[in-house]
Length: 93
Image 1 (cartoon, rainbow, N blue to C red):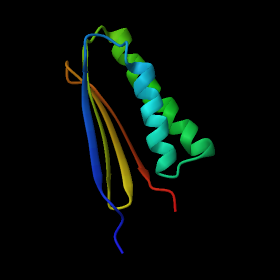
Image 2: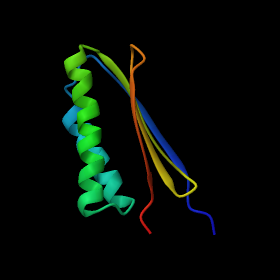
Image 3: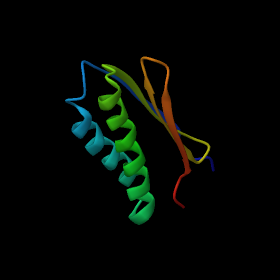
Image 4: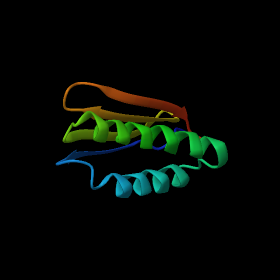
């Protein structure tokens, strides 16, 4: 049986006032997918660092993408100037 697939993407513009909300959304999604303990902490830490990079770079826009396919989670945070952060993790068993 194949694992379910989904894609959730959004664009943030106008600075970083929604970063805390996006961090909570990511934490909820990661927990729902089954991540816990150190794996959850690592994912959240990297994701929050990626959002913080947007705030310090002066970029007013970023695109965030969460994709699950073939038993893997792909997270992409990309910035208007072309820089991006990516993380790929196997889904917990």
